[in-house]
Image (spheres, rainbow, N blue to C red):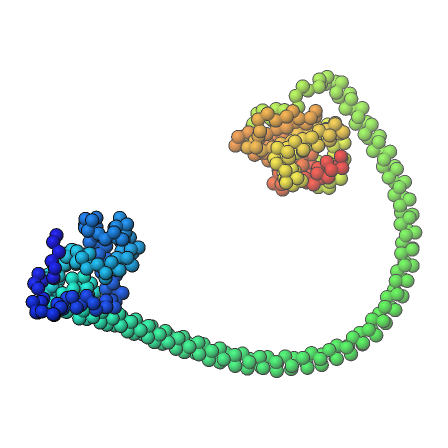
Length: 461
């Protein structure tokens, strides 16, 4: 692209006169105008963009290193050298101007004619006028600077107006908040006055009650003194009565001693009669066993109950023993001949040691029952709910039978079947704190005892 010697390709007016210099040459000696920052940045941006298309040899040597950067980076990092070169190198400035004017289109043509459209961006007008430098370019640059400054001043004024409006709104808000707070304080003051009045009334009432209480206390003190006198007289009367009762007690003890002696002699006679009766019954039982020739049974009744279900409608056995819930009775009952101890397993373990696992509960109870069976030689059966049955249960101690209820049957039902299976007259002791179990086995003549009696017996062992 050729670079014209003048923007309009025409010689300046008066160039042919002898001894006169053209206006353009005179302008070269004038100082550079002070550019607004926005106009200066736009000039550097146009130069940075033009350097991307200019041949390397047309770029000044001092800017060839900067020309290797990207346009944006070139305008940011090389702004100083580019601006200096544009101010000092007319040829480079004209090349950049030609490129910028070509891209500006109608705006560039208008600027070359020395006019600027009213709607044009003042920053763009100032930048193109500085680069092309047509006739009156300084005025165009100055006008662009004034327009830019006017816009900046207008923006500053707008910011100040917005800030002022914001402050006014905030002041209105603070005033409204202050009014609300004042209303709240007035309400609290009114409530405080009401509470103060109430407190004063309560103080008057309490003072009146205090005076009444003090009067009542004085009366009570007088009554207390009177009652103390009465109590002293009553104590003297009581001592006299105690002496009379002691004399009567001594007489009663003498009479009781004679009665005890008489009862002892009568009990000796009764014991003799009872011994004679038992001796007769024992000899009769020996003769009956010899006459019936009964062989010892291989299987006990409880063994049959563990395998077969009870027959429906089976008649209950008649009563065998009286109800007893005394823990000390356990040893007496187990000392009876052929006694059978039936234990509700989980009812005992969950009452005695619930903190351990079910497996350890079973093992601990069965081990303790083994000791009782060895000491008393009684038949022992412990019953657990079948839902908790564990495969591979270790063998039970000698003399202890371990049973689990069948599917659809509870341990309570199995215990009642065990009791019903025993022959009338055999002592059967059932250990369970379940009232329903105790009532059920009592109807069939068994001795129901609580779980605590067995737990204490195991603890003693």
